[in-house]
Image (cartoon, rainbow, N blue to C red; front, top):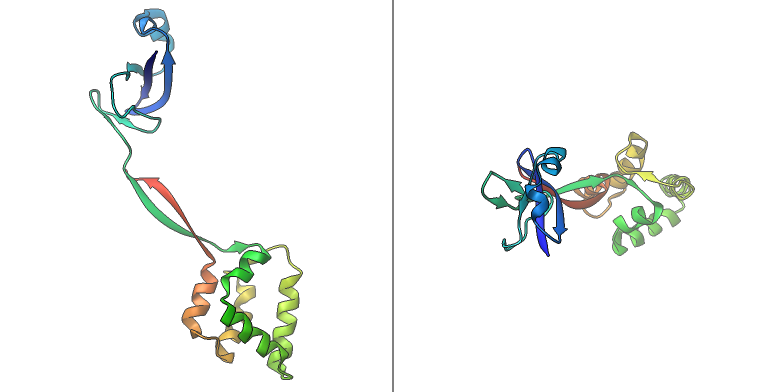
Length: 159
């Protein structure tokens, strides 16, 4: 069994396994293909889709870790943004018989009945301002973290 790689514009776009390499020298087949097919049987490691090829050498892509923040969260994801200590603090504030406690109760009820929460929307500003004025542990820095949402890491190819 032989392994092959199809290269178009310097990138491997397809890999294959062939019983014979005769097909690579069939002019009709070669003319019907986009790019160039190479025999990669003897190469270790075997080139994969996404690798570069400069005409003589196959090179794996250089990847960089990137963090993006997702701000539209499910109710459960939003709840999990808060620490246990913060939830205890919120429950304590919610149970206070003050205007601030009553307002938090209204906001929490409104949030509970939604399918998703956008942590970065201006509709959350009142809630975040309330957290700061009421003294959430961590203050404005913590509110900024909550507003960011959930960090998600991915890998992207470095050009």
